[in-house]
Image (spheres, helix red, strand yellow):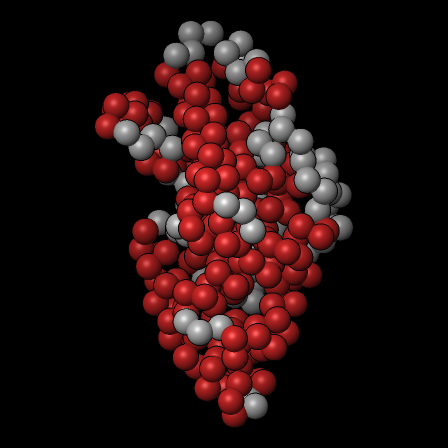
Length: 252
């Protein structure tokens, strides 16, 4: 995951300077072709947001396509590139704009209190049934991007290290690593994330999947740093508790 994030940062730096140059020359076609190189990451982010909305019953399948949101970025970046001073600002700008477009179109989900209030009582068959239903209902519908065949569109970007961060917690992560493969870890994390409300889930995804700092997320989400840190901490706790209850302390 770290390699993918670093690759994106490098591509973003190269793309930014070329975008500035193409804009100055008025070369719109080359500008759009260059911007296309950094859109797989944004497309994946939009896909996950839409998948979550479908899985939660907040959006009908086929109602939106990721392209409905990413296509607008060609206009937004071209019109604003003169005010974007660095590649890091470009990176944040892309997420900020697409986030605004998503917020205008998606209804914010409520926190699924029933799920988390009963997390101690779920049996292994109940967990497995929830995971199966989630996979059938919403997982991965939008993850194929034929126009942008790039490894950054891979869905398995979550890891236990993003959830278990203290030394004591890492010992639990080691136990889980021995029994769970990456695909199983991904499915469980995505299942639990989709039971959170939109702000909490989005903050975790921007941090874990996109490699953005809490300061950058605060700018994207138009929130305070304290709000972002609280949401990230809450998301990690809910994920950690779910792993422990389902895979470590499950006796059913």
